[in-house]
Length: 139
Image (tube, rainbow, N blue to C red):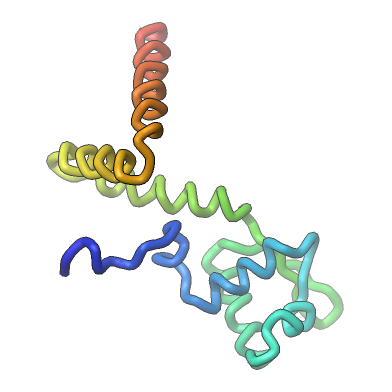
């Protein structure tokens, strides 16, 4: 499969199904605990039990907090959107860097950064220099 045919996105789409991601987005927009009934207004075409199952699945995967409210459960995200995307990216990079040769991964990363924004290469170089300085001072 050519690389260009892989799905694009922020990484969340590779971990979550479409409904799971839509539910997380709705939860991130809310403040505090949210019940299934509260979410129903955001998903008029989804069945109550479908939303309930989706929330339970996200809870069991460790992405939501859950508290008992009367006979129902209320949910809230365990992570902000940015934290979740960052964690997924870190996990993917950690996995890739365990390979025998990391040079192709680094090469692709630099190429992709420069393709998106040439100014990011300067930022990347600055971060590398900063890391070298801090590591040099701790040796």
